[in-house]
Length: 277
Image (cartoon, rainbow, N blue to C red; front, side):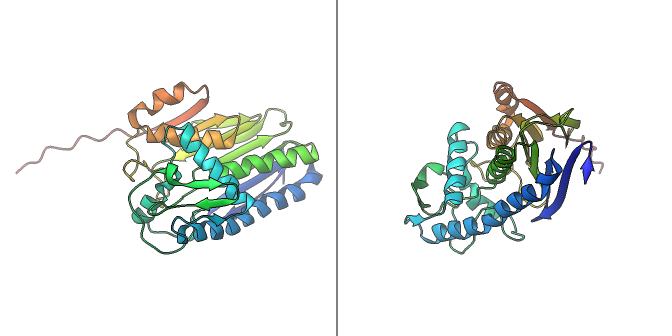
């Protein structure tokens, strides 16, 4: 499909829309295969993470993809001051009915506890240890990391402009089309010339929204969602999630990060009518 001199293809992956767009038509099939291959590789990463959970704290070997995803998640936890904690997975498993596989969350059985503490997770080289009751959920940063790497690799290899989007994680690399890549965000369309856009949502109907690692529940933010633009998708994801988790301080904190953002304010509570007896 050609749109304004660009060429793109769309499909669905685990209930999320995927969009791959390029400025050179001949590159589109290769770009699609690259993105589809990366998404398919998540199944191997999930199986490895499930083995790490079953190992109950014993180090297990992991492949390069899971190693990178865990490293990005732990880095986001540190950079956000613990607000983006991947060990929130235990609370998510307790509080939601899982509909199909969670993104890079792993599978298996066993007890999960309330504690979220990413510092207990050990990643040393190619070996990962996740001591119980911690349970990793890498969904906050995993797809953001993948779209960023896919966009950069396709742009570098084929010297073309490319945009990759999986759900609310969007990254662009290489020369953008004239006027930028059109992307829809709350508040109207945005022209993305490069970098990334990521939306974090605290009120998803399927229970997969942002969770506060301190409580395991939805954050008490004045925003229900926020979209952040940043040079890197993983950083944009970290900033968006952290802005919600920081509750009332989130807007002030995000304003000091030097990025552009599009928040969605929480609806004002309607006054309750007086009860008449």
